[in-house]
Image: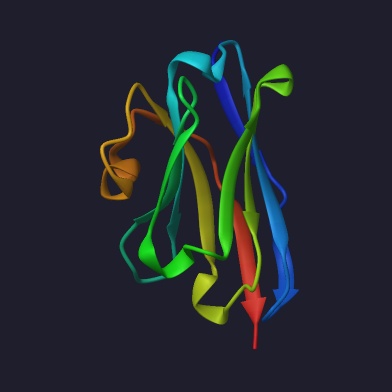
Length: 124
């Protein structure tokens, strides 16, 4: 059974860091694009970052450029989202999602498969 599981969320003060992990079981990421989207209470889902595993190309939403980094460890079949200089407005449930291609971060919430999500809370 194919499954995506996120981990690494939590509570952090503004300016702090967290690293989210997205692990796949039952399939490998190497033929896909993997992205993260988030959803805060009362707000729509927004795409945060994606990586195309075939060529390691990445895309980011403007508000997280220079603060977040998406990367992959193929040996562990895991994708990471390193989040630095966190702000209260980054508070949301973060979901990992998988699709054959990433046509811009706006497309990430429409990816075909995604995990249950991990809560990230940034206090001011």
